[in-house]
Image 1 (tube, rainbow, N blue to C red):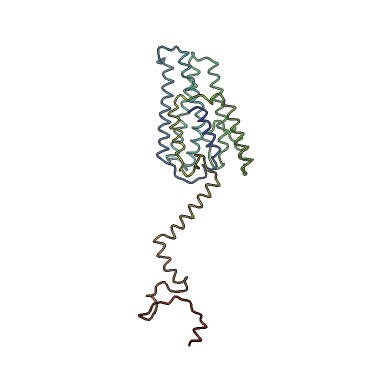
Image 2: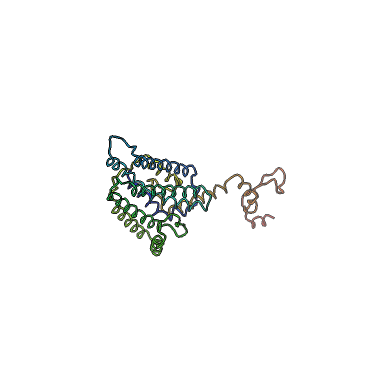
Length: 312
């Protein structure tokens, strides 16, 4: 897994946020807690790397320059992956429906942990004399770019989703949101154009990280799997893509219709229908409950009333 994959997943969730925020489903608590566990494990690896670099406990065969070259990919991972962290936190918080729920707590804890690691990184860049100003300036610019992207992508979320706890600049995020919601994309063509423009901007801004492997690739893969496992498999099509909102509503309508039919045909409903059938059919359904001469069977054949009168 490369760093670009984490960014693209964050953008994909953002672009599908109208669908992902509108569905009414119970998130898998097991997968959400698994996501937090993997996130915490990766965070511990980051803290350990910073501590080893600061205390000089890295391999004695490498000098400080080599140690920095080993630490630099971890710094990139910390900064770039915060985009996905805040997007997921916004989504979990929205479905948590208030304070105290598991989803809300996980969203708050993961966002706070990532912010703390970022602050530790800034402290390391400013306090460690062996890190050149050029390298420190590059990471500061990268962090500023990610923060703008976070504020921009959160502007794509629907208006009923609270984003204030996870943006970096409230004024900038509000401007982005007003611009995006002021021109809603109702037709498929406009949505495709927006998606293409977003992908082009993404590729241009982070082209450096297209082939940059993450230092903790296995943990990031597990983290991605846990995120995708938040939702039911029915939300994805046969190709593993998110279904369109129209297809989801159509599928939901079919499922609800099938459920109504199953309920009608169930045994409990069948007993009620047997009673009502007495008033609906042109002949009785329970012959023993009507006055029929003994020894004779009911004749359900239709007879013209005029013929009956002529016989009389």
